[in-house]
Length: 294
Length: 228
Image 1 (tube, rainbow over the protein chains, first blue to last red):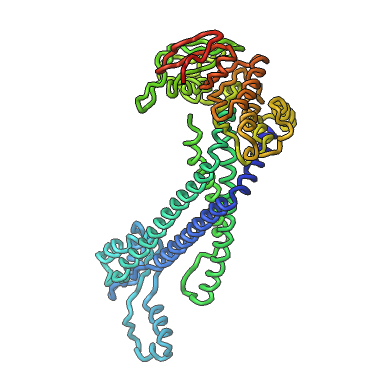
Image 2: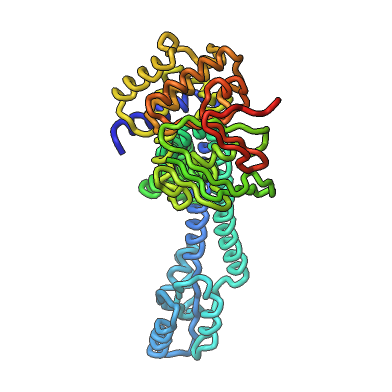
């Protein structure tokens, strides 16, 4: 490509945007709105899956040993638990530790002496699993092991929780896909209007022997610039908006874990700008295909 | 220069625009295409600059077969052909100079060369004083001059014109014909479809009459030959 060609393209793009100010503005705003929604959806998805992981990582199985086991047998039980597939970690709490913790939580110093020498609490193993979906089946396996008195893993609410977190993930993905395709349709529509308003120029360019590539470039670059501007506007809105929201949540709803990692947010914003440019270019290419045939 | 061999064109709606046409046009010729409306003149013109391809038969230009030509070779072909239409087809938001320069810019000619060649072409058609006017500010004859300037600015070896005087009054039409005559004198082959009886009769050039998609008549120094 020669310098003349580049100069021509630059001039064409600039004058075309200036000539079709309103159409260009509409394109930019469409890209911006679509990308703001896309960005918000991605951040929502990130937070939803972060929240889900957070909940899931708190799921654990409490395994209570039978009362009449010897220390050796209790240790053996621990080893067998560690050997199970799907088990991430096993933590031991002896009956003495349990009693101490219990008395602490009762905020009464006298409870151990009140009980005398008897300790009604059992030895306990706390088992964490690698895949939260398998908590139920692993708990059932443990329950059938010898020396196990009782297994507690909150089975009443775990199914509900897993269903909810799965639902959150799918909802996020569907929202992102829906808005991404809406953005593509709107942008290609805008560029189609732009190309249509200049079909005479394109017709004459073909007539005097301009190559298809030459005809295509100004439109592609125009689309990319419009997408870029829309993308930059959208990251300003999404970036500042999210920052504000995270600040508020962290100061008021402390118990909700939010994603506030700098690089991750920048990645999301970078994705928005690139998506804007790609959408602009793709929209132009789609709209031009028909006009450049034959 | 141009050779059509057993060319037929049937449009997708079934209309038979051209039926088994064979003809040859030499370099430097001036050819009128005459015949009733809808006889196939415009289709023939469009075959020449490869806006359309024949359904059957061969079209070749300077020994190059237009049917076997690849899509990306078409721009090169068109740079060697100037095209003029009845409705001028100028860009309304560009000045006279810009309209002519456009044809050079879009094929990647350097800016300095664009300026010189565009000005020369505008001068040739006698519009040097109006190069900064917009098409809307010009008369029909002047607009057609601009489109002639645009068509010849590439120094094409072939100029095709589809009823170039159709929208002009007789006097202005003659001005345009004088232009085309002079361009032909400089060695450019001219093929012109027309309904202008006076022009065809007085110019005494080769006349090819097309009727119902066939060559009805092909005469050197011919006449228009229709009553209407």
